[in-house]
Amino acid sequence: MMLKAFFPTCCASADSGLLVGRWVPEQSSAVVLAVVHFPFIPIQVKRLLAQVQQASRVGVTVLGTWCHHQQEPEEGLGHFLEGLSAIFTHEPWLQLCREKASRAWSCRATHHQVPATPGTPSEDQVMLIFYDQRKVLLSWLHPPAVLPDQQAGDATASAGGLAAVFDTVAQSEVLFCGDRYDEGPVRLSHWQSEGVEGSILVELAKWASGPLCLLLASLLSLVSAAGTCWLWRLWPLPFIGSKLSTCEQLRHRLEQLTLVFSTEKAQSPSELMRKANTLISVLMDVILGLLLLSWLHGNNRIGQLADALVPVADRVAEELQHLLQWLMGAPAGLKMNRALDQVLGRFFLYHIHLWISYIHLMSPFIERILWHVGLSACLGLTVALSILSDIVALLTFHIYCFYVYGARLYCLKIYGLSSLWRLFRGKKWNVLRQRVDSCSYDLDQLFIGTLLFTILVFLLPTTALYYLVFTLLRLLVVTVQGLIHLLVDLINSLPLYSLGLRLCRPYRLAAGVKFRVLEHKAGRPLCLLMQINPLPYSRVAHTYRLPSCGCPPKHSWGSLCRKLFFGELIYPWRQRGEKQD
Image 1 (cartoon, helix red, strand yellow):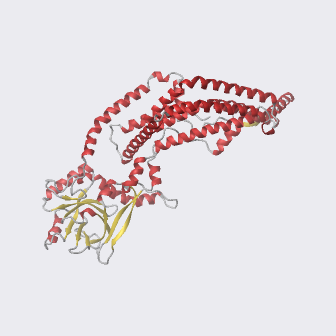
Image 2 (cartoon, rainbow, N blue to C red):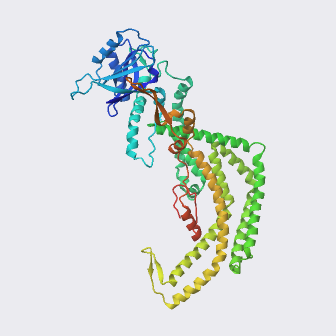
Image 3 (spheres, helix red, strand yellow):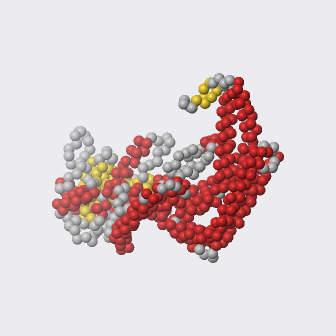
Protein backbone atom coordinates (compact mmCIF):
# COMPACT_ATOMS: atom_id res chain seq x y z
CA MET A 1 0.00 0.00 0.00
CA MET A 2 1.22 3.50 -0.85
CA LEU A 3 1.23 5.94 2.06
CA LYS A 4 1.46 9.71 1.69
CA ALA A 5 3.48 11.65 4.25
CA PHE A 6 3.01 15.45 4.22
CA PHE A 7 6.14 17.02 5.72
CA PRO A 8 6.59 20.80 6.36
CA THR A 9 9.57 22.35 4.60
CA CYS A 10 10.36 24.42 7.70
CA CYS A 11 11.33 21.22 9.56
CA ALA A 12 13.78 19.99 6.91
CA SER A 13 16.75 21.39 8.89
CA ALA A 14 15.38 20.64 12.36
CA ASP A 15 17.17 18.50 14.91
CA SER A 16 16.24 14.86 15.33
CA GLY A 17 13.16 14.01 17.34
CA LEU A 18 9.59 12.79 17.14
CA LEU A 19 7.13 13.48 14.30
CA VAL A 20 3.91 14.95 15.67
CA GLY A 21 0.85 15.15 13.47
CA ARG A 22 -2.41 13.56 12.42
CA TRP A 23 -3.11 10.27 10.70
CA VAL A 24 -5.92 10.32 8.11
CA PRO A 25 -6.92 6.69 7.58
CA GLU A 26 -9.43 7.45 4.79
CA GLN A 27 -6.66 8.86 2.61
CA SER A 28 -3.80 6.71 4.01
CA SER A 29 -2.01 9.98 4.74
CA ALA A 30 0.11 11.29 7.59
CA VAL A 31 0.16 15.07 8.07
CA VAL A 32 3.27 16.07 10.04
CA LEU A 33 2.75 19.29 12.03
CA ALA A 34 5.89 19.63 14.17
CA VAL A 35 9.04 17.89 15.43
CA VAL A 36 9.60 17.31 19.16
CA HIS A 37 13.32 17.60 20.04
CA PHE A 38 15.47 15.96 22.67
CA PRO A 39 15.61 15.98 25.60
CA PHE A 40 12.01 15.30 26.55
CA ILE A 41 10.01 13.21 28.98
CA PRO A 42 7.40 10.98 27.26
CA ILE A 43 4.68 11.79 29.78
CA GLN A 44 5.16 15.52 29.12
CA VAL A 45 4.82 14.95 25.36
CA LYS A 46 1.63 12.97 25.86
CA ARG A 47 0.27 15.71 28.13
CA LEU A 48 1.03 18.37 25.49
CA LEU A 49 -0.69 16.34 22.78
CA ALA A 50 -3.74 15.84 25.02
CA GLN A 51 -3.97 19.62 25.53
CA VAL A 52 -3.71 20.24 21.79
CA GLN A 53 -6.42 17.63 21.08
CA GLN A 54 -8.74 19.21 23.64
CA ALA A 55 -8.23 22.73 22.24
CA SER A 56 -8.28 21.94 18.52
CA ARG A 57 -10.49 18.81 18.35
CA VAL A 58 -7.86 17.23 16.09
CA GLY A 59 -6.43 13.76 16.74
CA VAL A 60 -2.79 14.86 17.11
CA THR A 61 -0.45 12.00 17.94
CA VAL A 62 3.14 10.84 17.54
CA LEU A 63 3.48 9.45 14.02
CA GLY A 64 7.11 8.31 14.12
CA THR A 65 10.68 9.56 14.32
CA TRP A 66 12.77 12.11 12.47
CA CYS A 67 16.52 11.69 12.11
CA HIS A 68 18.79 14.39 10.73
CA HIS A 69 22.26 12.87 10.24
CA GLN A 70 23.91 16.15 9.29
CA GLN A 71 23.41 17.48 12.82
CA GLU A 72 23.50 14.20 14.76
CA PRO A 73 26.74 12.32 14.01
CA GLU A 74 26.21 9.72 16.74
CA GLU A 75 25.73 6.24 15.34
CA GLY A 76 23.54 5.03 18.23
CA LEU A 77 20.86 7.65 17.64
CA GLY A 78 19.03 5.56 15.06
CA HIS A 79 18.69 2.61 17.45
CA PHE A 80 17.44 4.96 20.18
CA LEU A 81 14.80 6.45 17.89
CA GLU A 82 13.63 3.00 16.85
CA GLY A 83 13.09 2.14 20.52
CA LEU A 84 10.64 4.99 20.95
CA SER A 85 8.04 3.04 18.99
CA ALA A 86 7.47 0.93 22.08
CA ILE A 87 6.48 4.03 24.11
CA PHE A 88 4.48 5.90 21.46
CA THR A 89 2.52 3.19 19.70
CA HIS A 90 1.11 4.08 16.31
CA GLU A 91 0.30 2.01 13.25
CA PRO A 92 2.01 2.52 10.88
CA TRP A 93 5.21 3.88 12.48
CA LEU A 94 7.03 6.37 10.23
CA GLN A 95 10.81 6.59 10.17
CA LEU A 96 11.92 9.65 8.24
CA CYS A 97 15.61 10.28 7.79
CA ARG A 98 17.78 12.77 5.93
CA GLU A 99 21.06 11.23 4.82
CA LYS A 100 24.40 12.59 5.93
CA ALA A 101 26.35 14.87 3.54
CA SER A 102 23.67 14.57 0.85
CA ARG A 103 20.22 15.78 -0.04
CA ALA A 104 18.81 12.27 -0.17
CA TRP A 105 15.86 11.24 1.97
CA SER A 106 14.74 7.87 3.24
CA CYS A 107 11.35 7.03 4.65
CA ARG A 108 9.85 3.81 5.97
CA ALA A 109 6.45 2.88 7.35
CA THR A 110 6.62 -0.24 9.51
CA HIS A 111 3.89 -2.28 11.21
CA HIS A 112 4.66 -3.81 14.61
CA GLN A 113 1.57 -5.97 14.60
CA VAL A 114 1.64 -9.30 12.75
CA PRO A 115 -0.17 -9.00 9.38
CA ALA A 116 -3.51 -10.86 9.24
CA THR A 117 -2.78 -12.17 5.74
CA PRO A 118 0.31 -14.36 5.35
CA GLY A 119 2.85 -12.94 2.93
CA THR A 120 1.83 -9.31 3.50
CA PRO A 121 4.96 -7.13 3.85
CA SER A 122 5.50 -5.41 7.21
CA GLU A 123 6.58 -2.18 5.46
CA ASP A 124 4.59 0.10 3.15
CA GLN A 125 5.84 2.30 0.36
CA VAL A 126 5.86 6.00 1.27
CA MET A 127 5.40 9.06 -0.92
CA LEU A 128 7.00 12.11 0.70
CA ILE A 129 5.19 15.39 -0.01
CA PHE A 130 6.70 18.68 1.20
CA TYR A 131 4.41 21.65 1.91
CA ASP A 132 4.81 25.23 3.10
CA GLN A 133 3.19 25.14 6.53
CA ARG A 134 2.67 28.90 6.84
CA LYS A 135 0.92 29.23 3.48
CA VAL A 136 -1.27 26.18 4.10
CA LEU A 137 -2.23 27.54 7.53
CA LEU A 138 -3.18 30.99 6.22
CA SER A 139 -4.90 29.78 3.05
CA TRP A 140 -8.51 28.77 2.57
CA LEU A 141 -9.18 25.93 0.15
CA HIS A 142 -12.24 26.58 -1.99
CA PRO A 143 -14.34 23.75 -3.42
CA PRO A 144 -13.41 22.98 -7.03
CA ALA A 145 -15.53 24.22 -9.89
CA VAL A 146 -17.26 21.28 -11.59
CA LEU A 147 -16.52 21.09 -15.29
CA PRO A 148 -19.28 20.20 -17.80
CA ASP A 149 -17.79 16.75 -18.44
CA GLN A 150 -17.07 16.07 -14.75
CA GLN A 151 -19.41 14.71 -12.12
CA ALA A 152 -19.89 16.67 -8.90
CA GLY A 153 -19.18 13.59 -6.79
CA ASP A 154 -15.84 13.00 -8.50
CA ALA A 155 -14.78 16.61 -7.94
CA THR A 156 -15.74 16.42 -4.26
CA ALA A 157 -13.92 13.13 -3.77
CA SER A 158 -10.73 14.41 -5.42
CA ALA A 159 -10.69 17.43 -3.12
CA GLY A 160 -11.36 15.43 0.04
CA GLY A 161 -7.72 14.53 0.67
CA LEU A 162 -6.53 18.09 0.20
CA ALA A 163 -9.30 19.40 2.45
CA ALA A 164 -8.16 17.03 5.21
CA VAL A 165 -4.60 18.37 4.99
CA PHE A 166 -5.70 22.03 5.00
CA ASP A 167 -8.17 21.49 7.84
CA THR A 168 -5.61 19.67 9.95
CA VAL A 169 -3.07 22.48 9.69
CA ALA A 170 -5.70 25.20 10.20
CA GLN A 171 -7.27 23.59 13.28
CA SER A 172 -3.90 22.85 14.89
CA GLU A 173 -2.94 26.52 15.18
CA VAL A 174 -2.72 26.16 18.97
CA LEU A 175 0.30 23.91 18.45
CA PHE A 176 2.18 26.77 16.77
CA CYS A 177 1.76 29.29 19.59
CA GLY A 178 5.12 28.47 21.17
CA ASP A 179 8.61 29.00 19.78
CA ARG A 180 12.10 27.74 20.50
CA TYR A 181 12.67 30.43 23.15
CA ASP A 182 9.85 29.21 25.41
CA GLU A 183 10.95 27.65 28.69
CA GLY A 184 8.42 24.84 28.47
CA PRO A 185 9.22 21.16 29.04
CA VAL A 186 8.81 20.31 25.33
CA ARG A 187 10.76 22.00 22.52
CA LEU A 188 9.09 22.00 19.05
CA SER A 189 10.04 22.92 15.51
CA HIS A 190 7.38 24.37 13.22
CA TRP A 191 6.90 27.43 11.03
CA GLN A 192 7.03 29.82 14.02
CA SER A 193 9.96 28.16 15.78
CA GLU A 194 12.22 31.18 15.27
CA GLY A 195 9.74 33.50 16.98
CA VAL A 196 5.99 34.02 17.03
CA GLU A 197 4.90 36.65 14.53
CA GLY A 198 3.44 39.73 16.16
CA SER A 199 3.02 43.46 15.76
CA ILE A 200 2.55 46.16 18.38
CA LEU A 201 0.17 48.07 16.11
CA VAL A 202 -1.92 44.94 15.49
CA GLU A 203 -2.12 44.18 19.20
CA LEU A 204 -3.13 47.78 20.00
CA ALA A 205 -5.77 47.65 17.27
CA LYS A 206 -7.16 44.39 18.70
CA TRP A 207 -7.19 45.88 22.18
CA ALA A 208 -9.05 49.03 21.09
CA SER A 209 -11.42 47.41 18.57
CA GLY A 210 -13.62 45.81 21.23
CA PRO A 211 -14.77 48.98 23.05
CA LEU A 212 -14.92 50.93 19.76
CA CYS A 213 -17.15 48.35 18.08
CA LEU A 214 -19.37 48.20 21.17
CA LEU A 215 -19.80 51.99 21.16
CA LEU A 216 -20.51 52.21 17.44
CA ALA A 217 -22.89 49.23 17.60
CA SER A 218 -24.84 51.03 20.34
CA LEU A 219 -25.04 54.21 18.24
CA LEU A 220 -26.19 52.24 15.20
CA SER A 221 -28.86 50.47 17.25
CA LEU A 222 -30.15 53.91 18.33
CA VAL A 223 -30.26 55.02 14.69
CA SER A 224 -32.12 51.83 13.73
CA ALA A 225 -34.59 52.36 16.57
CA ALA A 226 -35.18 55.93 15.41
CA GLY A 227 -35.76 54.65 11.87
CA THR A 228 -38.53 52.33 13.07
CA CYS A 229 -40.43 55.13 14.82
CA TRP A 230 -44.16 55.37 14.03
CA LEU A 231 -43.71 58.86 12.61
CA TRP A 232 -41.93 57.39 9.56
CA ARG A 233 -44.97 55.18 8.87
CA LEU A 234 -47.33 58.09 8.31
CA TRP A 235 -48.45 58.51 4.73
CA PRO A 236 -46.83 59.51 2.35
CA LEU A 237 -43.42 58.94 3.99
CA PRO A 238 -43.32 55.14 3.33
CA PHE A 239 -44.34 55.72 -0.30
CA ILE A 240 -41.65 58.38 -0.82
CA GLY A 241 -39.01 56.25 0.92
CA SER A 242 -39.74 53.30 -1.37
CA LYS A 243 -39.32 55.43 -4.52
CA LEU A 244 -36.15 57.38 -3.68
CA SER A 245 -32.80 55.74 -4.39
CA THR A 246 -31.21 57.79 -1.61
CA CYS A 247 -33.37 56.16 1.07
CA GLU A 248 -32.51 52.70 -0.26
CA GLN A 249 -28.79 53.50 -0.23
CA LEU A 250 -28.93 54.90 3.31
CA ARG A 251 -30.69 51.74 4.51
CA HIS A 252 -28.04 49.65 2.79
CA ARG A 253 -25.25 51.74 4.36
CA LEU A 254 -26.81 51.22 7.81
CA GLU A 255 -26.83 47.45 7.21
CA GLN A 256 -23.17 47.57 6.15
CA LEU A 257 -22.10 49.51 9.26
CA THR A 258 -24.12 47.20 11.50
CA LEU A 259 -22.33 44.18 10.00
CA VAL A 260 -18.86 45.76 10.25
CA PHE A 261 -19.16 46.95 13.86
CA SER A 262 -20.97 43.88 15.14
CA THR A 263 -19.43 42.50 18.34
CA GLU A 264 -20.15 38.89 17.29
CA LYS A 265 -17.11 36.95 16.14
CA ALA A 266 -17.13 35.55 12.63
CA GLN A 267 -17.87 31.82 12.73
CA SER A 268 -16.37 30.90 9.34
CA PRO A 269 -13.81 32.25 6.86
CA SER A 270 -16.61 33.32 4.52
CA GLU A 271 -18.19 35.52 7.22
CA LEU A 272 -14.80 37.00 8.06
CA MET A 273 -14.14 37.71 4.40
CA ARG A 274 -17.56 39.33 4.04
CA LYS A 275 -16.87 41.64 6.99
CA ALA A 276 -13.47 42.61 5.60
CA ASN A 277 -14.88 43.23 2.12
CA THR A 278 -17.70 45.34 3.55
CA LEU A 279 -15.27 47.40 5.64
CA ILE A 280 -12.94 48.09 2.71
CA SER A 281 -15.91 48.86 0.45
CA VAL A 282 -17.29 51.42 2.93
CA LEU A 283 -13.86 53.03 3.43
CA MET A 284 -13.24 53.26 -0.32
CA ASP A 285 -16.73 54.69 -0.86
CA VAL A 286 -16.19 57.36 1.80
CA ILE A 287 -12.75 58.25 0.40
CA LEU A 288 -14.18 58.71 -3.10
CA GLY A 289 -17.02 60.78 -1.61
CA LEU A 290 -14.56 63.05 0.20
CA LEU A 291 -12.60 63.53 -3.02
CA LEU A 292 -15.82 64.50 -4.79
CA LEU A 293 -16.70 66.86 -1.93
CA SER A 294 -13.30 68.60 -2.13
CA TRP A 295 -13.68 68.95 -5.91
CA LEU A 296 -17.19 70.44 -5.66
CA HIS A 297 -16.23 73.00 -3.00
CA GLY A 298 -13.14 74.10 -4.87
CA ASN A 299 -13.21 77.09 -7.26
CA ASN A 300 -16.92 77.67 -6.51
CA ARG A 301 -18.01 74.77 -8.72
CA ILE A 302 -21.34 74.46 -6.90
CA GLY A 303 -22.22 78.04 -7.86
CA GLN A 304 -21.25 77.33 -11.46
CA LEU A 305 -23.47 74.24 -11.52
CA ALA A 306 -26.39 76.18 -10.04
CA ASP A 307 -26.00 78.96 -12.62
CA ALA A 308 -25.93 76.42 -15.46
CA LEU A 309 -28.84 74.30 -14.23
CA VAL A 310 -31.69 76.73 -14.93
CA PRO A 311 -30.56 77.56 -18.52
CA VAL A 312 -30.22 73.84 -19.24
CA ALA A 313 -33.74 73.18 -17.93
CA ASP A 314 -35.08 76.06 -20.06
CA ARG A 315 -33.25 74.68 -23.08
CA VAL A 316 -34.77 71.22 -22.56
CA ALA A 317 -38.26 72.70 -22.14
CA GLU A 318 -37.78 74.77 -25.30
CA GLU A 319 -36.74 71.71 -27.29
CA LEU A 320 -39.80 69.84 -26.02
CA GLN A 321 -42.02 72.74 -27.13
CA HIS A 322 -40.50 72.62 -30.62
CA LEU A 323 -41.04 68.85 -30.67
CA LEU A 324 -44.70 69.20 -29.71
CA GLN A 325 -45.26 71.92 -32.29
CA TRP A 326 -43.72 69.61 -34.90
CA LEU A 327 -46.07 66.80 -33.81
CA MET A 328 -49.08 69.14 -33.97
CA GLY A 329 -48.40 69.81 -37.64
CA ALA A 330 -47.61 67.11 -40.21
CA PRO A 331 -44.65 65.17 -38.73
CA ALA A 332 -42.60 63.48 -41.45
CA GLY A 333 -45.47 64.15 -43.90
CA LEU A 334 -47.91 61.94 -41.96
CA LYS A 335 -51.62 62.83 -42.00
CA MET A 336 -52.75 62.97 -38.36
CA ASN A 337 -56.20 63.37 -36.85
CA ARG A 338 -56.42 67.14 -36.55
CA ALA A 339 -58.74 67.37 -33.53
CA LEU A 340 -56.96 64.74 -31.41
CA ASP A 341 -53.56 66.10 -32.44
CA GLN A 342 -54.45 69.61 -31.26
CA VAL A 343 -55.93 68.34 -27.97
CA LEU A 344 -52.88 66.25 -27.10
CA GLY A 345 -50.42 68.93 -28.20
CA ARG A 346 -52.03 71.69 -26.13
CA PHE A 347 -52.37 69.36 -23.15
CA PHE A 348 -48.63 68.60 -23.16
CA LEU A 349 -47.69 72.25 -23.84
CA TYR A 350 -49.63 73.28 -20.76
CA HIS A 351 -47.63 70.79 -18.67
CA ILE A 352 -44.37 72.19 -20.02
CA HIS A 353 -45.51 75.69 -19.10
CA LEU A 354 -46.20 74.51 -15.54
CA TRP A 355 -42.79 72.85 -15.39
CA ILE A 356 -40.94 76.00 -16.52
CA SER A 357 -42.79 78.03 -13.88
CA TYR A 358 -41.80 75.49 -11.22
CA ILE A 359 -38.13 75.62 -12.23
CA HIS A 360 -38.01 79.42 -12.13
CA LEU A 361 -39.79 79.39 -8.77
CA MET A 362 -37.07 77.08 -7.36
CA SER A 363 -34.13 78.88 -9.00
CA PRO A 364 -33.25 81.08 -5.92
CA PHE A 365 -32.86 77.94 -3.78
CA ILE A 366 -30.98 75.73 -6.24
CA GLU A 367 -27.49 76.75 -5.10
CA ARG A 368 -28.36 76.11 -1.44
CA ILE A 369 -29.85 72.72 -2.35
CA LEU A 370 -26.76 71.74 -4.33
CA TRP A 371 -24.55 72.85 -1.44
CA HIS A 372 -26.34 70.49 0.97
CA VAL A 373 -26.30 67.71 -1.64
CA GLY A 374 -22.54 68.14 -1.95
CA LEU A 375 -22.17 67.71 1.82
CA SER A 376 -23.88 64.32 1.53
CA ALA A 377 -20.80 63.08 -0.34
CA CYS A 378 -19.05 62.68 3.02
CA LEU A 379 -21.32 59.63 3.54
CA GLY A 380 -19.89 58.06 0.41
CA LEU A 381 -19.83 58.37 -3.34
CA THR A 382 -22.78 55.97 -3.64
CA VAL A 383 -24.97 58.29 -1.55
CA ALA A 384 -24.06 61.22 -3.79
CA LEU A 385 -24.80 59.15 -6.91
CA SER A 386 -28.15 58.07 -5.47
CA ILE A 387 -29.05 61.71 -4.82
CA LEU A 388 -27.99 62.51 -8.38
CA SER A 389 -30.33 59.80 -9.67
CA ASP A 390 -33.21 61.26 -7.65
CA ILE A 391 -32.41 64.76 -8.95
CA VAL A 392 -32.49 63.44 -12.53
CA ALA A 393 -35.86 61.83 -11.79
CA LEU A 394 -37.25 65.09 -10.37
CA LEU A 395 -35.90 67.24 -13.21
CA THR A 396 -37.43 64.91 -15.81
CA PHE A 397 -40.72 64.37 -13.99
CA HIS A 398 -42.62 66.11 -16.81
CA ILE A 399 -41.18 63.61 -19.31
CA TYR A 400 -42.36 60.80 -17.06
CA CYS A 401 -45.85 62.32 -16.94
CA PHE A 402 -45.90 62.61 -20.75
CA TYR A 403 -44.88 58.97 -21.03
CA VAL A 404 -47.57 57.80 -18.57
CA TYR A 405 -50.31 59.79 -20.34
CA GLY A 406 -49.30 58.53 -23.77
CA ALA A 407 -48.81 54.93 -22.58
CA ARG A 408 -52.19 54.74 -20.84
CA LEU A 409 -54.03 56.21 -23.83
CA TYR A 410 -52.18 53.91 -26.26
CA CYS A 411 -52.75 50.85 -24.03
CA LEU A 412 -56.47 51.64 -23.78
CA LYS A 413 -56.79 51.71 -27.56
CA ILE A 414 -54.73 48.53 -28.08
CA TYR A 415 -56.81 46.51 -25.63
CA GLY A 416 -60.01 48.02 -27.04
CA LEU A 417 -59.03 46.98 -30.56
CA SER A 418 -58.13 43.47 -29.39
CA SER A 419 -61.53 43.09 -27.67
CA LEU A 420 -63.40 44.34 -30.73
CA TRP A 421 -61.36 42.04 -32.96
CA ARG A 422 -62.54 39.06 -30.88
CA LEU A 423 -66.10 40.36 -31.33
CA PHE A 424 -65.76 40.12 -35.12
CA ARG A 425 -64.64 36.49 -34.81
CA GLY A 426 -67.53 35.56 -32.50
CA LYS A 427 -65.37 35.16 -29.40
CA LYS A 428 -64.98 36.83 -26.03
CA TRP A 429 -62.55 36.79 -23.07
CA ASN A 430 -63.79 34.67 -20.16
CA VAL A 431 -62.59 36.47 -17.03
CA LEU A 432 -63.41 33.64 -14.64
CA ARG A 433 -61.59 30.90 -16.56
CA GLN A 434 -58.92 33.20 -18.05
CA ARG A 435 -59.41 31.99 -21.61
CA VAL A 436 -61.11 32.90 -24.91
CA ASP A 437 -64.55 31.29 -25.41
CA SER A 438 -67.00 31.34 -28.29
CA CYS A 439 -69.94 33.74 -28.09
CA SER A 440 -72.88 34.72 -30.34
CA TYR A 441 -73.61 38.45 -30.83
CA ASP A 442 -76.73 40.09 -32.25
CA LEU A 443 -76.81 42.65 -35.07
CA ASP A 444 -76.84 45.74 -32.82
CA GLN A 445 -73.75 44.60 -30.94
CA LEU A 446 -71.88 43.93 -34.18
CA PHE A 447 -72.87 47.37 -35.54
CA ILE A 448 -71.69 49.22 -32.40
CA GLY A 449 -68.50 47.14 -32.35
CA THR A 450 -67.75 47.93 -36.00
CA LEU A 451 -68.32 51.63 -35.39
CA LEU A 452 -66.02 51.72 -32.35
CA PHE A 453 -63.38 49.60 -34.09
CA THR A 454 -63.30 52.04 -37.03
CA ILE A 455 -62.96 55.07 -34.74
CA LEU A 456 -60.13 53.48 -32.72
CA VAL A 457 -58.27 52.37 -35.87
CA PHE A 458 -58.25 55.87 -37.36
CA LEU A 459 -57.26 57.49 -34.05
CA LEU A 460 -54.50 54.94 -33.33
CA PRO A 461 -51.72 56.49 -35.54
CA THR A 462 -51.96 59.86 -33.78
CA THR A 463 -51.85 58.28 -30.34
CA ALA A 464 -49.10 55.84 -31.35
CA LEU A 465 -46.89 58.68 -32.61
CA TYR A 466 -47.12 60.60 -29.34
CA TYR A 467 -46.56 57.38 -27.41
CA LEU A 468 -43.51 56.51 -29.51
CA VAL A 469 -41.87 59.92 -29.05
CA PHE A 470 -42.38 60.10 -25.29
CA THR A 471 -41.41 56.45 -24.81
CA LEU A 472 -38.06 57.17 -26.48
CA LEU A 473 -37.53 60.15 -24.18
CA ARG A 474 -38.46 58.03 -21.17
CA LEU A 475 -36.07 55.27 -22.22
CA LEU A 476 -33.29 57.85 -22.51
CA VAL A 477 -33.91 59.02 -18.94
CA VAL A 478 -34.16 55.42 -17.70
CA THR A 479 -30.86 54.59 -19.41
CA VAL A 480 -29.09 57.46 -17.61
CA GLN A 481 -30.56 56.39 -14.27
CA GLY A 482 -29.69 52.78 -15.03
CA LEU A 483 -26.03 53.65 -15.62
CA ILE A 484 -25.96 55.51 -12.29
CA HIS A 485 -27.54 52.53 -10.51
CA LEU A 486 -25.06 50.14 -12.13
CA LEU A 487 -22.18 52.28 -10.88
CA VAL A 488 -23.68 52.34 -7.37
CA ASP A 489 -24.15 48.55 -7.41
CA LEU A 490 -20.58 48.08 -8.66
CA ILE A 491 -19.16 50.11 -5.77
CA ASN A 492 -21.41 48.35 -3.25
CA SER A 493 -20.79 44.81 -4.45
CA LEU A 494 -17.13 44.84 -5.52
CA PRO A 495 -15.06 42.66 -3.08
CA LEU A 496 -12.02 44.94 -2.88
CA TYR A 497 -10.39 43.15 0.06
CA SER A 498 -10.59 39.74 -1.62
CA LEU A 499 -9.22 41.12 -4.89
CA GLY A 500 -6.38 42.86 -3.04
CA LEU A 501 -5.64 39.65 -1.15
CA ARG A 502 -5.56 37.74 -4.44
CA LEU A 503 -3.15 40.32 -5.87
CA CYS A 504 -0.75 40.63 -2.92
CA ARG A 505 -1.02 37.20 -1.26
CA PRO A 506 -2.46 34.79 -3.83
CA TYR A 507 -1.90 31.72 -1.63
CA ARG A 508 -4.54 32.95 0.84
CA LEU A 509 -7.32 32.07 -1.64
CA ALA A 510 -6.54 28.55 -2.83
CA ALA A 511 -8.36 26.88 -5.69
CA GLY A 512 -6.29 23.69 -5.43
CA VAL A 513 -2.70 22.49 -5.44
CA LYS A 514 -0.11 21.31 -7.91
CA PHE A 515 2.79 18.95 -7.32
CA ARG A 516 6.35 19.29 -8.58
CA VAL A 517 8.68 16.29 -8.60
CA LEU A 518 11.80 16.88 -6.48
CA GLU A 519 13.37 13.43 -6.55
CA HIS A 520 12.42 10.19 -8.24
CA LYS A 521 15.12 7.53 -7.97
CA ALA A 522 15.01 3.79 -7.68
CA GLY A 523 15.15 2.56 -4.12
CA ARG A 524 14.16 5.93 -2.65
CA PRO A 525 10.77 7.45 -1.88
CA LEU A 526 9.14 9.72 -4.40
CA CYS A 527 9.57 13.32 -3.20
CA LEU A 528 7.04 15.94 -4.31
CA LEU A 529 6.58 19.63 -3.53
CA MET A 530 3.00 20.79 -2.99
CA GLN A 531 2.33 24.29 -4.31
CA ILE A 532 -0.92 26.25 -3.97
CA ASN A 533 -2.90 27.27 -7.05
CA PRO A 534 -4.51 30.68 -6.44
CA LEU A 535 -8.16 31.31 -7.16
CA PRO A 536 -8.81 33.07 -10.53
CA TYR A 537 -9.83 36.73 -10.34
CA SER A 538 -13.18 36.06 -11.99
CA ARG A 539 -14.06 33.41 -9.41
CA VAL A 540 -12.89 35.67 -6.57
CA ALA A 541 -15.23 38.42 -7.76
CA HIS A 542 -18.10 35.94 -8.17
CA THR A 543 -17.60 34.12 -4.86
CA TYR A 544 -17.13 37.15 -2.62
CA ARG A 545 -19.49 39.57 -4.38
CA LEU A 546 -21.31 41.68 -1.79
CA PRO A 547 -25.10 42.20 -1.83
CA SER A 548 -26.25 45.52 -3.27
CA CYS A 549 -29.17 47.75 -2.30
CA GLY A 550 -31.10 47.42 -5.58
CA CYS A 551 -32.26 44.44 -7.58
CA PRO A 552 -31.30 43.63 -11.18
CA PRO A 553 -33.76 44.11 -14.01
CA LYS A 554 -36.41 41.37 -14.04
CA HIS A 555 -37.49 41.94 -17.65
CA SER A 556 -36.06 39.95 -20.51
CA TRP A 557 -35.73 41.53 -23.93
CA GLY A 558 -38.81 39.65 -25.11
CA SER A 559 -41.02 40.78 -22.21
CA LEU A 560 -39.67 44.33 -22.48
CA CYS A 561 -40.57 44.53 -26.19
CA ARG A 562 -43.99 43.06 -25.43
CA LYS A 563 -44.64 45.69 -22.75
CA LEU A 564 -43.53 48.46 -25.11
CA PHE A 565 -45.79 47.18 -27.90
CA PHE A 566 -48.89 46.91 -25.70
CA GLY A 567 -48.26 50.19 -23.88
CA GLU A 568 -47.63 48.75 -20.42
CA LEU A 569 -45.56 50.86 -18.03
CA ILE A 570 -41.97 49.70 -17.61
CA TYR A 571 -39.73 50.10 -14.58
CA PRO A 572 -36.52 48.22 -15.44
CA TRP A 573 -34.72 49.25 -12.22
CA ARG A 574 -37.32 48.57 -9.56
CA GLN A 575 -36.41 48.73 -5.92
CA ARG A 576 -36.53 45.67 -3.71
CA GLY A 577 -39.87 44.54 -2.41
CA GLU A 578 -42.10 46.19 -5.03
CA LYS A 579 -44.59 44.44 -7.27
CA GLN A 580 -44.21 44.23 -10.99
CA ASP A 581 -46.92 45.63 -13.24
